[in-house]
Structures are given as structure tokens and as C-alpha cells.
Image (cartoon, rainbow, N blue to C red; front, side, top):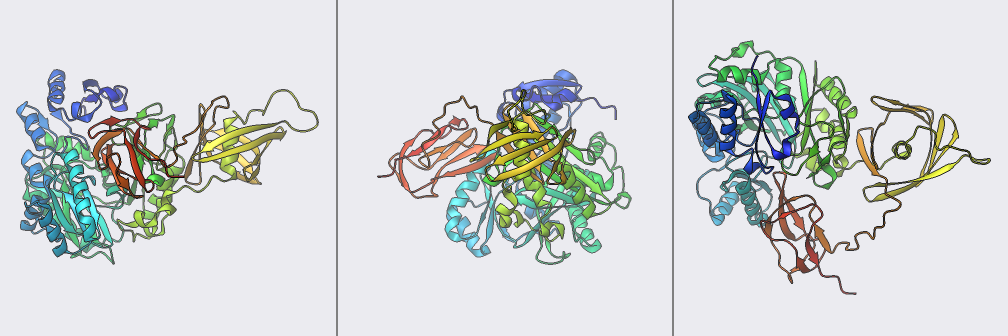
Length: 628
């Protein structure tokens, strides 16, 4: 379009991909978002200094901040998005629901008023009937949201939701809604010019963990022409009711207990910005939504009327994160030693091999999107794309995504938002490494498939030992080369012969037991990563000269699982606790993480304070040693 770009960046992102891609780049402050990406004055100064005419707010941070919109316009710049008035109308969920009710958009039963005292809200929850959702009236992305299934859990859930909402949005007000059993999350992409609006059909975002989306697809499985028309018209009414301009998403909670019905969906919220999952809509419509954003912001009319917007095929997107799915989806950090996506998929990423996943921002690595003529083809193409992704250097959800795409309820389109929680370890736990994985890891750790060793050994093949660690498991494996094209790996319950090993850009090509296999093998220093059959295994080769006494504390010490801020302390020295009691709340990577007592005991030391910044591995709380 001939539009030149200026990137703004924090100190932590000085070498980031978006900085390299832009025509110009300006540093706006230190790594913490409050001092850089949320610093309105610094952003406006960068725009003025570079002669920019408009500001695109991206996906998060200030994208739904009406004060920012007004500051941009006061500086003589164009905000590429809706008006401050429209953002305010939808920014607080309670008022948005009242507005939608007036506009004839169905809303979920609940309390959306101004009274915020604890006892009153608990009484409203009782009247609505459990289970209920506590939701922050500001913001989104699952922040400040708690599912409460019993009255006894309400008080703690309310405290946690308020604290998270205050930290994320500066507003701790909440609303209470009835939790819809077997809910599906279906949202409609809308686009307005300030007067009229159109929709670009729907996306199904039901596969979620911790109220954050994992897999998104367009169109929604099981959607009928009647229901699509009803949802689309409701979404357009919502957008036109607030004079919406630009791209937005109207989100609905849908009764997934049976076939979709025209009277079985309710307004949940409106995101007054471009969504992370917009590529699936682009894939099925063939429309570049960012181009539409730029044209409408420049004063042009909507490029197409409703009946001119096509809907072709099916698209599915997976959110690839640096996170430990087996450990409650705990965010991870690390340096990406490998990152490469295969042909056949669209990969939107802000990082490259060599980049660090820092503790300061959301740990998303990429969005991976596949499009095909039908849903089954799109799912198969996406899974193949994930299987062919070369990614190493940090813990990721790659294996989890691959298994999720094979879940029967997803494949047949009957999933709801509780699917991931119900499946538990079946989705989140990688299977134990098999002989192919251990064999490949052992050879890679020794620098093979080059010859096993120089020189010769009398009568029998030379055998070398390699020690690998995978999580808590330690493997001691014996590697030999009885023939020039054959390796044997034994030990730790493993006995595998690997033949005809070749390296290819996609990984290794090996013959094991007469079968040809292709694991993806990546080596960086002492670390070996093997991707095989949808799972990813990270091995480290310990330094044989290193002396380590190990952590003798066992369950007596609670350490920081990642860098973060101690948001709340719930215990003091000398206090008796039971296993599972809340010790403290750590805020990291935009989420709150509850750290709990590993066993019954008495608190010996509290080695942190509220508001303190801690590093990964720091001791936070120690229990007294148990009596002999």
C-alpha cells in the first residue's frame, strides 16, 4: 500500500523482529511495560519525531484504552481503530451488557450493577445459582476471571479476581454471571465505518485453557445458515449501536449441549480491536483486515457490502506458547536455539532463532494457521505443520497442541470450553520417550551419526556411555557401532538398532527395526531436543566434571518457578499450614500464579515481601524440617 512504518520498542526488544522489519524504529523505555509500551507520552513523542500520521495499536497494551485514543487525536494523529466513545461503551462489561440489552442483543443472566461489596455480590451469586463466573468489568484475555462452583469458594475467588483485575487493568470492579454448562465460545468479526457495519462471519474459539484461547477456527463447526444470520445480525446491531469504526469482535457464549440454535447464544463482550485469531477469518474470506483498518482510518468507506464478502473453505489456528502444559501451563522463558516452520502453513511470529522469550511479556511464540477446502483438511494440514516445526530452547506447548488436534470431541466438532480441563494429563503430558527418541538423543548427544570414535578396539565394537537427563529422569545409555552404517543403543530398558541414518533439513531419516522413521533432532550445546510423533522431548547432557550436591530441601522449600512480582503474601513465620494452603501469589507474564504448601507443616522463613521482584529459583518460603 506504500505505507512506511515506524516500530516502537523497549530495551528488552532492541533486537526484535518487528524492529528489524520496520522502516524506522524508536526506543521508548525500559523493559517493564508500564515504562515503555504503556507510556503514552513516549509513544506520541516517537510519532511526532518521525513524522508519523497514524498509530496502529496492535493486539494489546493500549489498544482498548480510550484515554490513549484521545491523546493520539489531541496530538493531531489518526488512531487506527474505533473512537474513544465506542471503546468506553464496550470497555466495561457491565455497562456494555446493559447497552446490548437495549439494542436487542441477548445477554447472559447475571448481576452487572455498580454495587461491589462482598456480601452483596455473594448474595447475587446465590440468587443466580451456582456455578457462576466472576469477571472483571474491564479488560479481557481471562484476566480477573474465576469460575466458582460452590458458595464456600466465592470469597477467595472474588479476592483473587479483584487482585488480578486491579493489576492488569487498574480497575477491580467485577460482575457475576451464570456459568453456561457445555458452553461454546463463538465470536463474530465485525467491521464498521462509524455508521454502518458488516460482519466477516464467525470464529469458534471454544478450545481454551485458563480462559485463554488455544485453537481457533472459521467457520464454526455445526453452524447453520439460520444461526449464522442471527449471530451476524446481532453482532452488526452491537457495532452500529455504538457507531463503531474499524475491526472489532463481538463474542458470544453459546449453548453447546446440542445443535446450535438461533435462540441459544448470548452476548459476552466486545473486543474493540483486532484479535490475535484474525488470520483464520482472513483465510476464509480472502480479505486483509489490516488493509481494511488502514483504509477506513483514512476516511474511505467499507470496501465491500455484506453480500459481497465471500466465505471459502475452512481455517484453523494454533497458538504456540513457551509454556509447560504438564505443569498447569506455567509460562516459560529461554532462548530459542531453533525456530523454523514448514511450508504449507502460515506462521505469524514476532521472534526468530536466537531470540529470548523474556519474563516481561506474553510468552506466545507464534500463531500457526492452515487453510483447506474443508475442516478435516485444515486440521490435518495444521497438525502436519506443527509436526514439521523445528523449535528448541525452551519448554513449549507443541506436543499439547498436536494431541489437542486429535481429540475426538474436537475432530467431530462437539467440543466446549471445558474440554481441556476435563482431558487433563491425556492432553498435557507427553508420553515417556520411546526407543526411537532415546536412540536419536543418545547419538545426537555424541555428535553422531559421524563415526562413533576414532581408532580401533580389539575383537568387539567400541562402546561409549552417554548420560541424558529428561525432567526428573536420568538415562544411562551404551552406544556402539558394530557396522559402518549401523548403531546400537542399549540401557535403561532400551535396546534399539538404528541403521542408514541421514540428516535432512526436516530432521533425521533413520531405519529402526526395518521401519523408516523421521524424528526432528536439534542440538544446541549440551541440550538435545527430539520431536517425535507429536511430542517434544528436551534432554540435557550433564557435565561429568560438575560437582552438585542437589537440592536436599525436598518439600521444605517453595521456590519461584519463574521471574515475577510477589503480589500477595498469605503466611507469616511460625504459622501452621496444611498441604495445599495458599502461601503467596506471584504475578508473572500477565497472569497470577498461586503457590501452595507442598505438605503439612510450620512456616520457618518467609524470604520475600509483597511488591518484591524475584528471580526464577529464588527461595520464597521455607517450612520447618519435620520431626524425626
